[in-house]
Image (cartoon, rainbow, N blue to C red; front, top):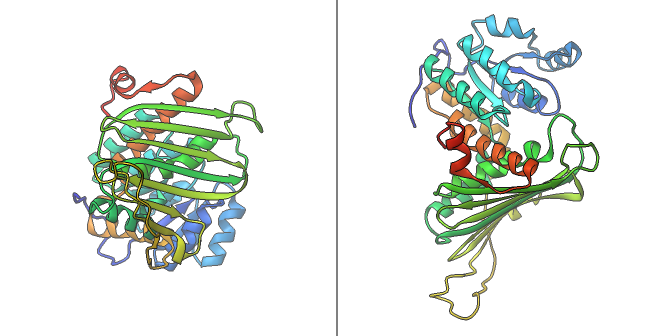
Length: 347
């Protein structure tokens, strides 16, 4: 990873402000406070900001005050996705390091602009793809990287629950970024095509259920099923390789979150039928993923390290969401190269 200019003023722990004190912003504030980095909070609803400020003994500031405070070196953006681009632009232009909750923006061209702004100003631009910091996924990724399940053939993810029904974004944009991010970090191949389908039942034109199918030029396939109209919670991520299979289920207790199935599907080794073997539970250290993610942002600010989920990674995920939305709207499969060559964007 590369290095970037540090503007922490010599402090061991950079100071941050959390902009947005809604459902997720309060969790970010809690973690940055526990890490000794929270200096201020901000929300368009002053009552929300005041409540968090009183809880943690920090300042409740306006957005302009956050930008102009020289003691604040990093700004964490946890507002509705439609505001991500405009607020991130203003923060980068104010020479602040920026952490943006997923998705990075709603348009690919805006994501590219944010990447360029951060590069010119030598600022950190990090995207909140939380699952990339989950101990279970980090372990799964390491197992795959070491080749312990052989060549990856197929991946699927189910992220399902009942509510909250949203109007500003559909289930694809609300739920799928995490899973797309995980898939792209595991498959070392370019995307060939994207096909998505879905249905809207609660609010017209806002899909409550979507299924996105990805095909890679290396022959790997993946699908992402998301819904907020499901009778129970399910968060299951499955990776199938020639020499074994991995299952990550985040809603299970820590001893059962990650399972290795040594089932072989290599036809050269198993000519007649898959070879089944006993499941193995992988031991994990129970650490809150959000704590690790927040700590990573602080480390990147302090040490000038490019984040694991930087702007470039965020833009890759955004391109998949953009292609999936185009497929969802048109009903057609989107050919990756045709889409991005046509728009003048290099994938």
